[in-house]
Length: 313
Image 1: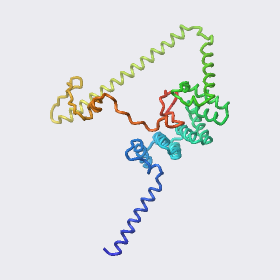
Image 2: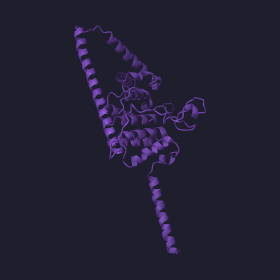
Image 3: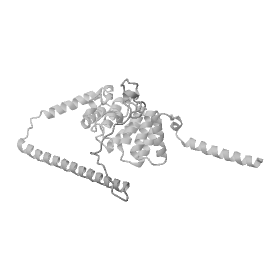
Image 4: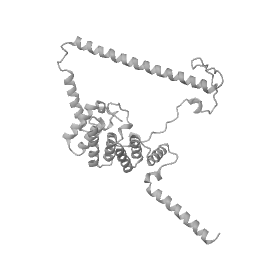
């Protein structure tokens, strides 16, 4: 091989390396730190690759931003959440989580802006009202904090439960706001305002209740009919597939006999006690990505809350 051929090879290798370096330079830093055998990191990489190919929906971008926040990349999380807003400007949940990330980072000004934009889209977002109250309390704005706390408990009373909302313990004003709401509710429930015609009211209410039950029964009947039609269609297709030139004999699901399955000592279908050596103990589950115990301002989406406390999307 002559010197010209060697020169061409060297130039080709240099060009290839330059392309690789340029691609890596465009990649965020977190991509190079993802662990190959970690399920959580591989999930992030999967979402990131789909994000680069513009295949992610706005709500999936919110999930990607949430994962990046828990992984320790708040700036990248905010950038992804902002991209979700570019795709769906009405996605209040993205604004709320931007506020949470900025709040946790101590950027209270940016957090306040994000919280308020969330509430502009959804006034009754219980979590957002509560965290904006926390922010105002930290800034020393007690009156504003009480207003947001009361709004949070009005739209989502379950947020007063410390098991649902551990941040209740970190606030001095939230308890006072909850007590005020409790007093207002007690006053309202004890008012001497009975119905003047209770029998009429109850009779009309019972009529609507019967109509609602009938509507639900009709809906269930329609679903059962649709499921039956799907089963008949599946049987017909099975007949056509199994016997193109003749009549196939189809055994119904109810008439099919169950045959005992053989178990191997290490088969996937073996019992837990067999796999664990007869101890009968369940295997230790893998910790979920971003436990709330690991973060001072855990995202509410990881908590066991009702739909009333967290509207979601």
